[in-house]
Structure formats: C-alpha cells, structure tokens
Length: 132
Image 1 (tube, rainbow, N blue to C red):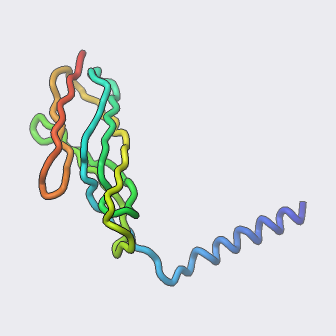
Image 2: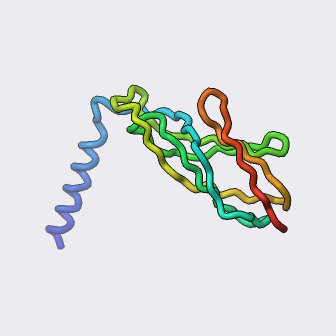
Image 3: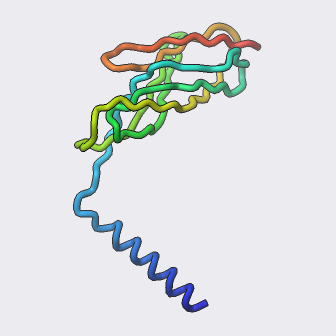
C-alpha cells in the first residue's frame, strides 16, 4: 500500500512540475467558423429541444470548435460558431470541416428563420418549420 501511495504522490508531483513552468505557453484566441450548411430532421416541435447539425470550416487546420453563440434579431435566430486557434498559428490554412449539433428550443409554432455567420458579413440562411 505504501508503494502505491509513493508512486501516486510521485506521479502527481511530476505532473505539477512539468506543466506549471511552460516557457512558451500557447495563447489561444477565438475566431469564427465559416458555416457551409445545416441539416435537421424537420419538423421541430414547439417547446421541445430541437437538434440542428451545423457543418463549418475551421479558420486554420489547428483550430478546434469552442461554442455556439445565439441571439435574436426581429424574427430571426442569429448563430455564430466560435473556434479556438493559436494566436500565432504554426499550421496550414488547409480547409478542414467539422460538424457539431446546436440544440435550440423554439417557443412557438410556425416558420422560424435562422442565419448562420460566414466570413465577410455573409450569412447562411435556413428555415425551420415548428409544429405545435
């Protein structure tokens, strides 16, 4: 038992020492993903979470998905995909796509409009039919 405790304490202290004094930490910044298309199994049902698969291009090849940001403008749900990338990327600009699911609950039945941000203030538009 003492041997296991000693090994565990050694492993924990090695991890603490090896990660705490990184001489060249990588600063990550948020960048926008470029939405290519969306896909969903319509119709959505009012008051219930609805899944929308969002396919987007990452800003650079070493980027990763971070989150979705949503807000309303009039009768339209606006969506921005946020990705994380190194501040000074040492990777390629090759286009790499990723698909993530956005969950959203539409409060009312009817036709709902969505806009997904792309680059240069261009938006990908989608329409969702919501049943009662």
